Image 1 (cartoon, chains in turn brown, yellow):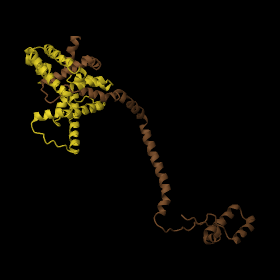
Image 2 (tube, one colour):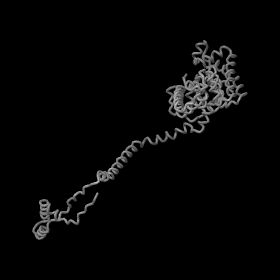
Image 3 (cartoon, chains in turn cyan, yellow):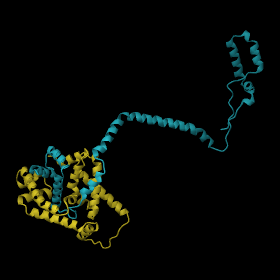
Image 4 (cartoon, chains in turn orange, cyan):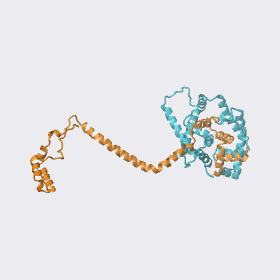
Length: 189
Length: 202
């Protein structure tokens, strides 16, 4: 093997090789089994000189790590799609936030609508049937109606409406009393 | 010279998807890491398992490594945490009492080595590697031996060694390389005549 290359490898092992040369040699080291084996033996020499007692110098640790990592995706392949996804997500993240907020609000409103009657009913066994509200259509007395019809030719339409309105507001009891009872529907809640 | 240029160049390759570069990092630091973990667990086989787990965690976490600290400092922290967690989970599991265990470090060390399916051939090979390297170091010319020992044992930089040995940095680099070559020549004979290089180097 090239002595200069081996010399560079030794310097690289000691972190004494210029960065540009390190880049080139790292590329070669990662692929060249001869260089890797020599690199591994340099590490063993260091371990012996430092008298690292109890450490097995021939332990197959690197092989075991390598075997585990074989099953894993390479880091670039593993991280690149995530980066791409993050880039893709970046522009619509604010929109997504707004959409989520709107969805939550809509669901809350719907939920409240469906829950409101149930919540009222669940408060007790007894409940009060509300009195029916007065009908919007008030029926005037027959006498007054006849009077208005009989004299309609003498009054303009606006005056007739005013007269009818005045009667309805001044005598509400009469108007409600004339509602037919059979038309009132009570819906139990 | 960047303090971590070598490791960083390997780390960047791993981050770009080159698993082979991670092999080089494991080969470089496996002994240091096992030694570190053995502060927490005494059994070498258990320490190797924890170191293996730490390496795998480090690999998976490498996309987050930005190089703020050196790679080994970062790996060191992962290994310490992995070892602490292993000790905690082991303490929670049913205790296996070893009535024969005595407090002598060396005998317990041997017991641990034998207990965990370490083959006698493997133990012999570790001892043979150790004695071969020591013999090769003893046989080195003094300037080469001093250079490699200052580097590996004292952890000095080439510049510091050059200052200590009163010689140029280039000479230090050459001496260390020649020392390694001489030792490696002897070491290769052990591996090639032993159990097979791939298995032994892991």
